[in-house]
Length: 415
Image (cartoon, rainbow, N blue to C red; front, side):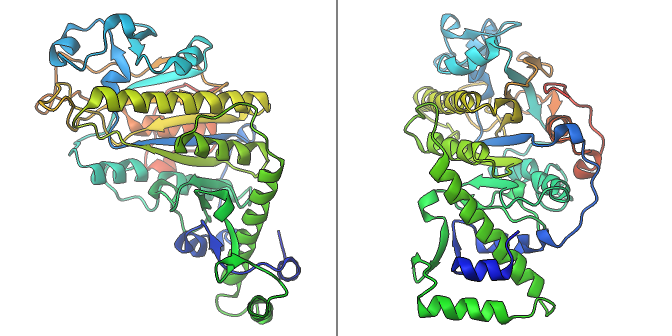
């Protein structure tokens, strides 16, 4: 960890562009706080990348019940033609634009979890996202489910990029007062600046700020807060700049913001920045109209990005360390609407991708003949079972305290 004297010698200013002030200040106590956690040593170094499919992804057209008459009857125009579906097993297949994920399935690197949801869905984006992000349908647990997980991991590992978000602000699932979460959209804008320009130790304003910082007693009120905040921010800025200098992607990423974000995550992983949890969002899944074209394009963006990411990690020898998990706040209604789309639904599907995934179908398929709540798929797999699997089965942290109860794991990751 950098000392205050190291900070002065480095000549950097006190403001980090790209990390929200709130998360930075909240995370300042991370380097002083002590948390008890009996993590599994065998899971050391494992990384979870969480991909949010924001808006409510249509699980039925993502993992298609290809031979179902009920599916085709409810979706006269939106049903994927049976001959176009990429076959998996048990009569299910992938959207035709998920060819890269189909190859991962064939290689045993893709798990599909069906019927994922929670009790008493109210079909609100905001409420459902809050529930998924908290890991608690009652919204009684503090902070985000990954924030609570990072608190346990932080007790053994103090890297500034322990948690890393691609975006402009910390997502709710990563929120915790104990760990600072860098949020970065453009690495070129992530650094320390004075009056909008890179900090210069010879500039009078910078020298004054640094002198004030050096003279503030660490034992004074908020002294540790200030020192640890700046040290975490300085370390993350310098580490990301060094990783960017050294990293060369082994594959061509798609020219999308999603592809660019995944490339940045790969840069942090390959650069050894100590990432244990990364987060990225792909939006646009609220397909009330024009779903065939819009959802098809999103499937292609998702597939091309994740396929490049996996290939890049494999080429750099890091694929065994990384698990990718997708989630969306809910699925879509079974029947199509009059606008060529689908309305808010209930249960959906999740993907788990990685070299150490136990590939296959997990969770019971929800019935298309016995719909619930005016035309929705009932959920068959509580989302907390998925969380328990990645928290304990992958990251090696006991999950019961973090999720408020013990949940049966699904077994789609190697122990």
